[in-house]
Amino acid sequence: LCSSPSNRSRPLSRVAVSGGTHGNEMSGIYLAKHWLRNPMELRRGSFAVTPFLGNPRAIEKCVRYVGRDLNRTFTTEFLSSAEAEDKPYEVVRAREINQTYGPKGSAQAFDFMFDLHNTTANMGACLIVDSEESLLPMHMCEALLQYKYFEGVTFLSSHSGGRQGSLPMQCPPILSPLCPIGTVFPAFEIEAYKITGRMDYPRYPDGEISAMVHPKLQDKDFLPMNPGDPIFQTFSGEEILYEGDTTIYPAFINEAAYYEKKVAFAKMEKHILFNSLKILLHPLPAPRMD
Image (cartoon, rainbow, N blue to C red; front, side, top):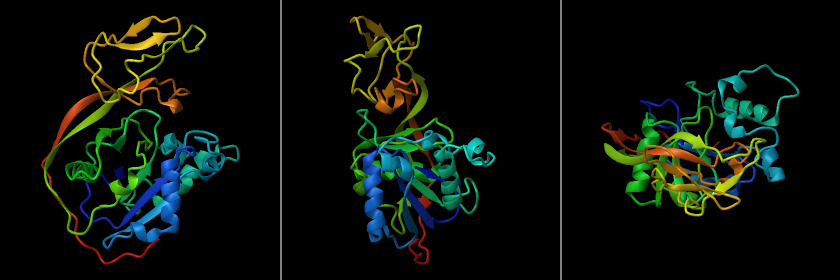
């Protein structure tokens, strides 16, 4: 979830919901297709909601991407680079999305973006926010958790320029409340996780993986990892232990899409975040459906 700007002083008027940023993550793809066919399901009295498909070519081929990861392409470097015929498709597509729903960081940009993803890790339903300073997304996460619209967790992405997340088929109930008119978000405390780093697999000198995620770690996303806990097991059966000096909380454990990124799991810290500011969503004239 991300909003623009972070500390907003005006009501929402335009919200976008994207599916298929990665072309083989099917929940968001089929939800976006469904909402494109049934736009009234997303209609709200106080703002317009626009669903779209993030990476149509990757969706057609049912692959994560065709040239490069679209979710890592919304940076100034790519959005402002010179036009060239040999640019990967995702660079072109990122610019199209930025022009349609942005430009990024501008006053014309959509007010809020939901980007729907799947993960092969055992992470359940997650709400991922670009920054703890993003006031409205943090309030929305707290409200969803508080009112039991879904059972899940919140964490903060340290990835710059991308929007990543994990929302399985619990998406419709997560999005159904979508900030009705007059909603008050009070001050709150919320438990959240912040990514602090990433752990690669052990490797042979030639770069090949030499160990797998330890069975005792597999599927233990968001649970504490303490110094001395087993994290990998070599193919000959030897255990490799966590050598850090503090407890961390792993996520994206053994995520299939992260093998190419040399990530066995993300390392996170648990935080209790406090926000003393309240938000009241004021009504607006009924918007048109885009």
